Image (cartoon, rainbow, N blue to C red; front, side, top):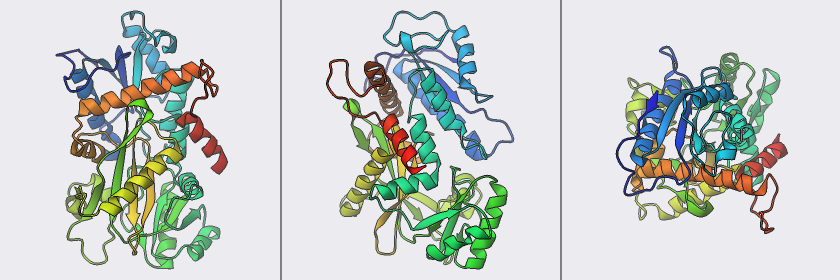
Length: 404
């Protein structure tokens, strides 16, 4: 579907300088799909609306067969020839110069490799695209590898381990103190965090592990100690000149949860509007004076996790406090939801940023990363001979190799 240009660019934010067209690529959605999959359409709507406000032409592209290079050729055939532009060398055959891909391709349940593989294809095409590199997506998709990297970098993570089979893997419950929370290592959107996700006894944990190993074949499980304290979400957004803006810290409140009900943002809390967890899990933004030292530490840890994992464009880091009030990193999300009602956009709004401003920053970051890649030709120095700071995608790739 083609989106026509309408109106003038937003007065509060300018159109990204080298962009002539944005291809909004996303996973296809069917009527029977899980809500965690169909939610991508709300993200497409937000991005498309922001691009219209910025005065940038856009094309929506469902990537049906996970072969984005073929789908992009179809887009190129439908485009009119573009004028000269500095991104001409980046465009695959048929794509107009100045084309940028806004990468919203996500992994449906059971296919965790889809979105990093899509980013890898875009890198091979040498086409600028939004968000993190393939290496950073591969790393953050693997919760076990992410935990290992963060711990190696000195960042606090809950005590935990890997469980790949039973009965041999049950030894992890001897190393990790209870209560335990179990989740598949490669899924996102809280898939696998449903029902009785927190286990207080070894018998319950073994039964839960057996169930998850059946439901998610071929995936190891992450076994972590369940931390009982407050839960914080920290969203981060690229800023000019390679800087990163840490958006206002959100807290997830579990309102009127009965005793014994785990306070987690599980599958029901995200995707089942009729559930108690959905209606009683509330996001708020603590005031600075209310918890200034805690919020400062949350921002510090989130930025450190962003850098350790080599994220780009935008991301979110989830943290949880233990019984002593010490925050630990739970998750590093390299492609958080950009729907209007999701946490990332709520944090951006709290910072006074419009959707157009957020999308413009993400596109500018994509262009800057692409320019840096073309300037150094894949080497570690600029054309003028001065050393260049290591690119986040190469940094993430190197760290991914180190923990694999």
